[in-house]
Amino acid sequence: FPVTIYAKKFQLWLNERSLEHDSLTVLLSDSFKKLKEERYFRPAITTLEKCISIARQQALKFTYEKIKHIITDNNKRLFNKILSQHDEIENITYLRWLALRETSNSVDSIKSAIEKIEFLKKFKIQKWFVEGINPNRKKYLARIAKCSTPSILEKMEEKRKYQILVLFLTETYDDLVDEIVDIFIKIMFDKYRQCKRQIRELREKNAKNINEEPIVTGK
Image 1 (cartoon, one colour):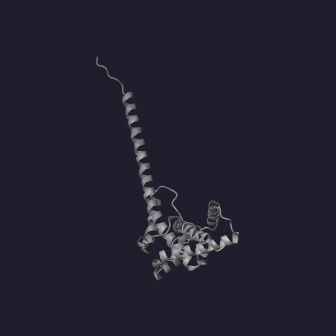
Image 2: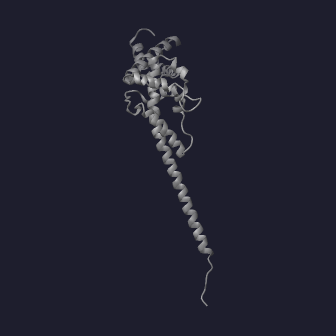
Image 3: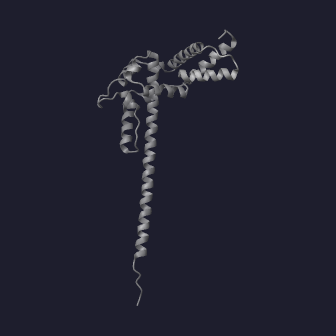
C-alpha cells in the first residue's frame, strides 16, 4: 500500500470488520471484495496479511477492554478449573462437559442442563456484564473454546485466552437457559399431542361400543 488516504481508510475499515470476524480467511476474503468494489489495485498478499494482523490486534485489545473487569484473581482460578478434569465424571474436562449439548427432549436432559447452570452460578457468571462486543465476535470466540482442547487454550496469549473463556462461559450460560426452555416446551407439546391422541382413541372406542350395543325392541 502506498501511504495514502485510501490506505488509512482501508485500515480503519479492516479494524471495524475485525470486530465482527477474527478469522484470517474471512478477513482476507472480505478485503478482496472491498478492494474490488472500490476498484483499487490489490496489494501483495503479505501486505494484506500485515494489515489484517494489525486489525486483529486492535480487535484483541478492544475486546479485552470490554471484559477486563471480569479478570479477577478468583475468576482466574475458575478459568484454571474449567481447563481441568471434571471432579466427578471420568475422562472429561469441565470445558468439554459444559460444551456438550443435550440430544434428547427429556426430564434427564433438563436435569443435566440445570446441573451445569448451578455449577456456573457458583462463580456468579449470571452477573457478569459483557457489553459492546459484536454478537458475531462473541459467538466466534466462544466457538473457539468449544472446539479447542485445554492444552491449546493454555498456550494462547493470556489476554486472548481470557476473553475466549469469558465469552464461552457467558454464551454457555445463556444457551443453557434457552435450552431448558426449549426442551420443556417440546416435552409439554409432546405430552399435549399424546393426550390429544388418547382422547381421540377413547372417543372412537366409546363410539364403537355404542354402535355395537344390541338394540332392544319392545314386544
